Length: 304
Image 1 (cartoon, helix red, strand yellow):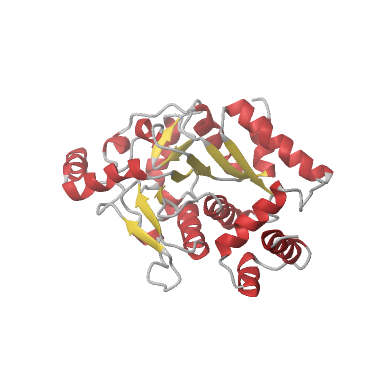
Image 2: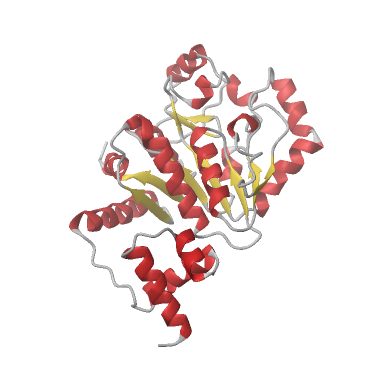
């Protein structure tokens, strides 16, 4: 056994049998965490680690494949369903951060959307990566959702759109979008290898309502126009068709038509109350990858 294989075996043993974290293994072996990740992946590819999935694991694999086929996705990352609804966002955020951290290269750029789940994901991601990741906001109004940016463990460079998410008028929104400080950030989105977006529901607990961006009257108006959900505060109907409303005209947000042109758009969402919104986003073709849980996957696979 050569040195590389010896490291693979040690990393695999500590990870799968001793339940050590990747960082703890890195410290034990005096190597980087990224090196541990690559060793574990090499161990899987070389047959040092061999898996036999339990029946429930096979079920998750089958669900992922079925979702990919039904909605023409590049990838699906499923996690076990949370026992309590209140922990769903946190679980999905951790899963999203893990998914991205394992796939980012050096000097990586990612685009990030608006909302609670995205904020949690970014904060988890920024503590996982070894080298700073460049994050580019896709909407205005992101700053309040990045509470840990002053922490010394927050390993990210942030490029935020210096504008609110929703302007007071269509004319004001148009003027803001024309400002060079705003348009330059929007243009930077083309540089990113991944784009992370949340999916909102038409519910009183939605981030845009709790944060005061939209009122409950706005929500009622949107329901009357058959809205079921939103991405980047762009609202759509059950088929994923964008709704042209006065709210749409006032947004400082990357258009959904442009979102479709960006690379590796990853949607992060789960929960029964978001199932219709997630389905609509998938039917609209806005996502390349979906990170969700088993229970939500089951709802998405049911025939309507």
